Length: 221
Ligand code: CO
Image (cartoon, rainbow, N blue to C red; front, side):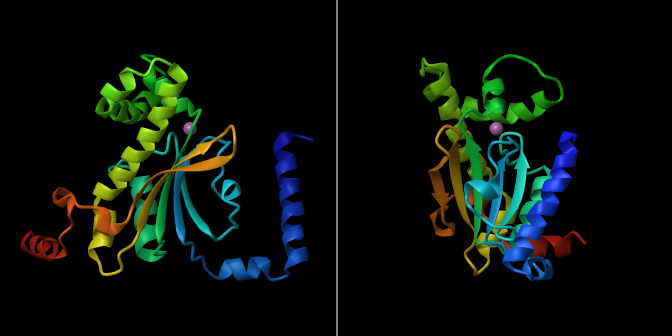
């Protein structure tokens, strides 16, 4: 049997197992989704969002890219974020990195890999911000692990600074809470790196102002 054929076969076994426990399992799931969490994680095959959090289908909206990067011109991620906050109304957004991340390792080197270099530049930008701290770590593995943590922190801040989260925070609901976690592929444990509640965020520079937004949109026709 070919490897992909096994996937289709396993799928049938999985579906019938779910039905044997609850005959309405898929009928209930098909009605709608109301996940409480948005997960922004690395594409790495060893960090599956649902499995490592023991979550079930329907409990988590998921976006994954190489090195869990948040770029506010990424139409894909921004569409996921907008839909998650404005339609699904998720309460928590989790950015999850992981130790041993290949992209983080690559970003520290001077090597070129083609198209992905442009994406890795986002990680190099994080390195630049924390250069003083990172340059003096003599052990390469420790340096990589610290950059994994700092990258998660910066991507959470990118979410916080962005218009979609700022607009959600400006509304009366006071959601979402932002979380930065790092998954340890050696232990299977998630480490809590940073948490930002709406009221924790004090930087007025990025504040979304609904009143001026409406006024300016109107005056621009
Ligand atoms: Co990775």
